[in-house]
Amino acid sequence: MRSSLPGVPLFQLYGENQHWPGTDLLHCESIPARSRLHHWEIKPHQHAELFQLLYVQRGKAEVEIEGVRSSILEAAIQVVPPLTVHGFRFSADIQGHVLTFGTALVADLEQRLGAPLGVLAKAACYPLGKDRIQLRGLIETLQQEYQGNAPARAAMLEALVTALMVWISRRQQLGQAPRNRDERDRQLLGQYLRLVEAHYREHLSVEDFAARLNIPSLQLNQLCRALSGQTALQVIHQRLLLEARRNLIYTRMSIGQLSDSLGFSDPTYFARFFKRLSGQTPNGYRHAVQPD
Image (cartoon, rainbow, N blue to C red; front, side, top):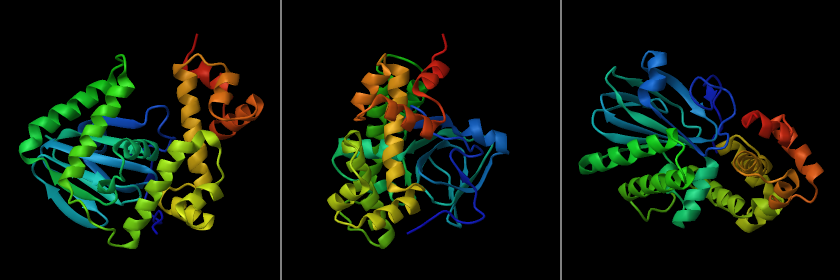
């Protein structure tokens, strides 16, 4: 199993160290928006628990993945899994976008599609070919929705990302069994994330989840640490925290109602849990993001 490498920067988004995501499950920006700030070069680095899709619309991208260099000279999508050491160098006329999303969105997509997203388990480049105009429209619509605040924004973003994942998955050869331990581990992590997504409100123990996966809890913890940078329990807690933040921003639930909806037996315990993970009380967080 892999872990972060000594000497390789471990970022959330490149050049940033603050926690992400907040309430959105994905981040979308143009390639020039960030690479221009770094003289068109993104030096080799890793993301502990974030998946990335590099969409090159036009221009040239020199890609370095785990020390292997290649060039993208046509419209394509490059998949970068968590903990993959990667770097890019772009031409000044580069056009395209970078989509970044966490394990919670992957678990949601896998549940929606009813199958593991094996296409995200390894780094690979997928030329768009005859579909380049279709994909350009899809991703530009996604970027517009991401930047906007239209009604049903979250539902539209989920639909667009799902369509994108279906396209990429169709481009990958289907029906292959895991070829090595690394791929098996990633599939096992995907199964765990789907279980967490389905049952995080039930406050099951790590041992309960491990039993459902038919593996020891120690193995589950080692797997999560290696591939997500978190313990198995932290994965559960971060999912609860994400849902709490969403509801504090987008609903008028009282703290007691929110505590009940997330499966906490006592609002006081929920408040302590939220403050321990976020550094703020639930009411303090709500007032900070929704000032009067």
